[in-house]
Amino acid sequence: LRLPKILDTLEALPPSRPVELDLTGLRHLDHACRTALDNWAEQHNATGQDSPVRVTGTPALAGRSAASGE
Image 1 (cartoon, rainbow, N blue to C red):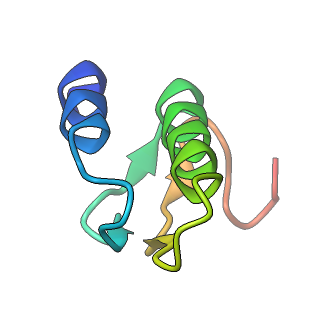
Image 2 (image 1 turned 180 degrees about the vertical axis):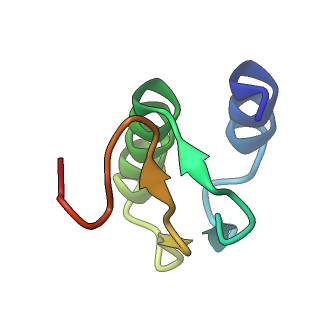
C-alpha cells in the first residue's frame, strides 16, 4: 500500500460522498498506515455529512498477533 498515494486519492473525494474502505485483501496493516487511515476517516466524518466513512475487513496490525492481542 502506498500511503501518500491513497491519502491523496481519499483527500480528493467530495465530503458528501459515502466511503467504504474495504481492507479484506490485506494480511497486515502497519501502525502508521492504520493511524493515517483512521485520522482521515475521523476528519471526513467531522464534516457533518450523512455519509460517514466505514472501514471493513480490518487486518491485524503488522507485528501483532491477532490471537494474543499484542
